[in-house]
Image 1 (cartoon, rainbow, N blue to C red):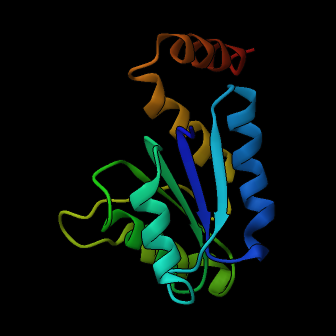
Image 2 (tube, rainbow, N blue to C red; image 1 turned 60 degrees about the vertical axis):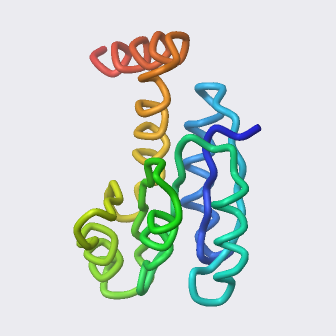
Length: 145
């Protein structure tokens, strides 16, 4: 049973997804990764979101970067968007994810910043998980050294 579902629009996003997975593994967070494009596989995206047990979704997407918004339109759970530097130095993706319409929020991390997406997912989960909160506190303390 995954606590985080990671969706990317393309196999080419795998290096960014790997950064997310490294963080989630470090904290012992169960997750699943699937490739499902908002444009090429919209039915797959719908099915994955609707049938997921995840508490947090992460959408990794470049160019039009519609995937995080499509996920957010299909769930009331938190969605984190990771813009990919696929064109225009990633600025197009960043703006597509950050400029969501009213009442359809998507948290947006920096361009290609899978690590921050993983940490943000852990922070969200830690709100209701004391053991994860403890691990997160230790991690944050280690950054001060």
